[in-house]
Image (cartoon, rainbow, N blue to C red; front, side, top):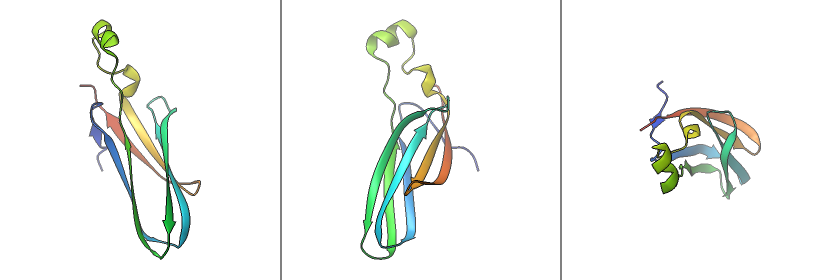
Amino acid sequence: MATPAFFPNEKVYLHVTFPKLAVGTARVNVNWMSPAGTQSNSAEQVIDQETIGPAALHFWLSFAPNGALTALFTGKEYKPKVYGQWQARVFFNGELLTELSFLIHEQ
């Protein structure tokens, strides 16, 4: 399977689906890991499931461009640390569920 690729001006969306989730409260976290291996951002959503059944969550990551002055002096719209192989680490109630890789291309 090919690694999904994006440009830094695009939002990266992550759709998490649970086909049959048990009754109760669950916490789903996503840690967005930069190409340097550091956590760049994180998000958490809480699911309160009243009956057994499906649940779907949406997460996203976007990148802030350089300011006008920095872009003027560097000629770059985004900081170099944005580009490269990223990972989304998805946790369910504190346990690692999956790791997904994606690439941010230079424009």
